[in-house]
Image: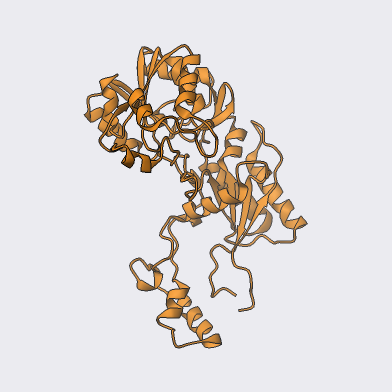
Length: 397
C-alpha cells in the first residue's frame, strides 16, 4: 500500500458572483487555475461541488417581499391566514413572515414545540415533562405556553422567537395570534385558510390540514412557482430553500440546475480529457449535537448532479473483517486478505454482515454534507469544493 492519502477535499476560491454571469465557465476556470497553482491534477471521478447560493446568484433568482405578498394575497384572499410549523430563523423565515403579514389582515402562527422541525428550541423538552405537558396531544395558547415555560432565548442567536415573530407581523400592520401544537389541524379552530410551512414533512402536514376541513391550503413549495411582477421563482420548490438577501428581498433556491452540472462536466472533459462528477449542494444532512439543530433547511441536499453520483455506497466494513473473517491474521497477510475481499465484494452488499456499520445514505447526501462543512456559510470564500479519491478504497493503489 504505497498511497497514504484517501479522500481529499479542497475549498476553491471564486470571485463574488453577480447576476447574469456564466457560472459554468467561472467554476471551470477557477478549478483549473487552482489545479495549476496548487499542483494537483484533474482525474476521472473527481467531484466538483458548487453551493446553490452562487448558482441562484448567477441566475438572479431573487424575489421581493412585495412579490411574495402579492402571490399569497392572490391565493388566500388577504383577510386571515394561518401558518403551520414555521421554522425559527432570521435568515430562513423572517422575510417570508414579513411577506405573509403584508398579504393579510390577521396572521395565526402555529408553532410546533418543544422545537421546530430542524431542532431550534422554543422550550426545553425536559421542562415539558416537569410541567405535565404532552407536546403530542396538548394545544396551548400564548398565555398558557408562557405560564408553563416562560420566554426562551435561542442558545446561539439569543433571540426570543415568539416576541421576534410578533414584532415582524405587527410592524406590517397585521394582527397576530400564536398557538402551540403538534397537531396540524389545531389551527382550523382559528381559520380555514392555511399555509403549511414545514419542509420535509410538508406533504403529510398538508394532508392532515385538508382532512381536517381547510378551505384553502398551500405549502411553501407552492408559493412563487411562477414569476410575479418580474420576480425570480422556482417551479419545483417555490419558497423552500430561500434565505434573506436584503431587508426587502430573498434569494430563492436555484432552478434549472441539471444543464449547469452537465455543462461543467462537459467543459472539464473538453479541457482535460477527464470525466468528473458535478453536484450543486445546499444544506448538508447533519445534526449539531450541542444546539440540536438539524442542518437541513433546504428541501434537498442536492437539486442536481451528474449521473455518476446516483445511488448509495457499496462498501465493506474494514474493522468487521479484521475482527471476524481475518481475526487470525496480522501485518501483510491481513492487509492482502482485506484487499482481496474488497476486490471480490458483491455488487450489492445490502443486508450483508460485512457491510454493517457503513453509511446507508445516498451519495449526494453524503458528498453534499462534506461540501457544506468544507465551504461553510461565512467568509471562507470557497463556494466550490473539489474532492478527489472519494470513490477509492483501501484496495486502490
